Length: 483
Figure 1 (cartoon, one colour):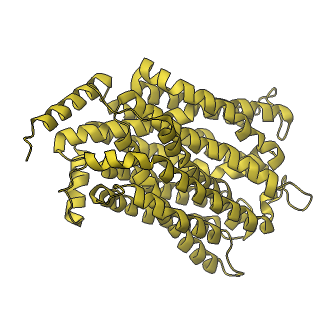
Figure 2: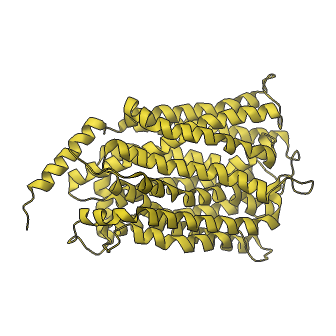
Figure 3: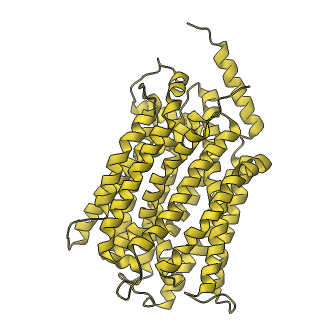
């Protein structure tokens, strides 16, 4: 059976757009909670609650945007108009988020943070869900679909690997006054302006570079299928999605894993400075060294999925990442005599090597997950007669964001429970607090991550099953009489 194969420029442009989400994620994961808690002095619990509420708004908007994009009919396709619409609001709201007016009240900061975090996430939803669904529409081949999402994941990790060290180097050098350097409040204005511009540029490149696929995508969609989006229909669409066993396995596995990763994500910026005792000048080498792993990951992705198929690739890669991340933390917590000391160059080398392994495996995990959801969309079409990439991927996003919001609250609350001081300089945090920081970010939470990974065992679409699905869909299409 002959299927359409994408050309490299379209695949490159599709992947390049992921830089926008990577920059936003770096801003939220590395800088945002630290900025409001350590620089502005807002309670970690209050900050995390604001971020969690914004994330819940985002989680609810994902299904709405996903279903709307499935039903949207324009001369420019279902996804491209929404993706382009996201660019300018995303950049402007991100800039405002890191540049609040002078305020003295925690609650005033809370309202500003909540408002613009919601705007950032709502803007990104217009890009994120249609972009994922666009990939399922563009790539029809089982293996090229994995390659396309690998390209997107590659740029996502590339953005994080470059944006953070570039930010540290250009805007956050360590000084006698600012150590950790992220305490420098004045640096956030030019830094956020740069980030906003880069996000807008990445989305525009994605739209322009994939526009040649629009005529083919428009032809694939039933032009008589225009209908209003109703809440009852949206609920029915999700119910039908959950009838799919493979969808349930991936959905609930991602929920548990993401909950834990979100808690760990709250702790990560504090880990680098206070648990590992590293400066921004040292920390920047970890993501830079990961670049080699990203290129290796891009080459390794199609090989692994052909050798192990997608489910085994996902499970094996995820378990290896969990083990790799925990080994240095457990050795440090145990006080092993031969393990490198805090802040040492030897420790930096260990963390660089650990980061390199993660950089090889993590993109494979995320690209494989996205490719599996795209395969589920094909099976869903076979079962229901409707193409609902938007619904499938919005449900995926809902799982990530709903559980991430809970993880943010847990993480922020835990920071306050262990009495982590605000505006803390290097070496000023009590040893017991630092030990608890590492214990929570490492072994205490990883047990639950493993349980989430094991849920993926319920996924049942392999290459043979996908070939059968595509064959039946083609037979159904050719059997429909012409009007």
